[in-house]
Image 1: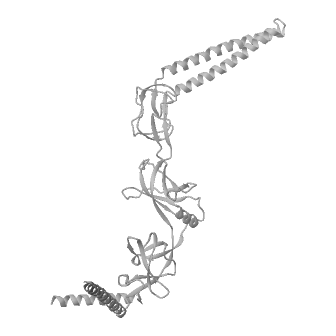
Image 2: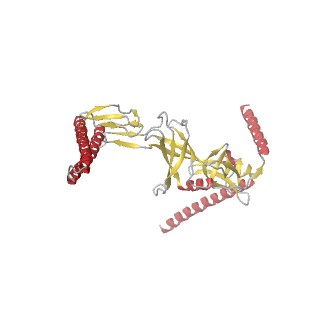
Image 3: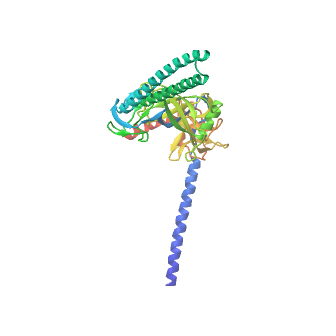
Length: 396
């Protein structure tokens, strides 16, 4: 029994060693084949810099410059509404009426009181003028004159108070006509005609201003630093383009004229704001769009040909030659295109050598043969001719 177990183990070990030997042999054979295979021909170019105006795209949101809640400033029943929900209204336009009778009566009473006191004052003025002549001739006592003077001054004060009260009643009377404080678009009516309202009832409706209008968007703090360095200053106005949800460009350009004074710690971005003219009310409060921000001054950035860039799940990459002329896979971070080149933010720099043609044939770390673009075209033409001949022979 023990002898059988030893034999079985020996066979298993022998099979493993045999399999291992075959694998090593195949690897050696493959390695020799690889070494004997001619190095693939590739075209190599040097990374150049290009002077461009940097641009940054970001999701944007339309925000009204003014958002005003329309409130009742007095208490009373709503008797009329002068607009429809969604209407565009002008500053000073009447929106609601609050029952005016009570306030109209109060105003009339205040006005009548002013008239009454003014009549008394006019009589007192005449009496005082007569008394002034009489006191000079000692026909009346000085104390009597002083009393009439005091009465006249008292009536003057009463008239002033009554006029102020009348003006206040007129002011309150004006509040019976609830007017729009700004130009803009009216929202939903929250309190309908027939309801009793007070200053604490809340907004009767809300108005969003429409022209001009704001657009806010986030900018990565690193991009903000690059932008500020490119322009030479952070606080400056910049051109902004706006693209609608259907991809069309908004016909008017805006101006980025404000940025927040802090970085959002949760997103690492700074909120930027642009102002747009909106004469036809095409931009609507709360709408989501795409903003494109332009730097003011050009800056030199590395660019690589589009044909040199490959992409996989990890991102975009190029093959850069090391000091031994061996291609190495290097991932790059791009920031849009300029013509037929990618603008590179990270990964390669000016002077680096990258493979621009023949990429499909190379293997990272394996030697390559560097040829010119003209030589590569000849090689490709010969290969194509060979393939065509092979196809014709196979058909025969």
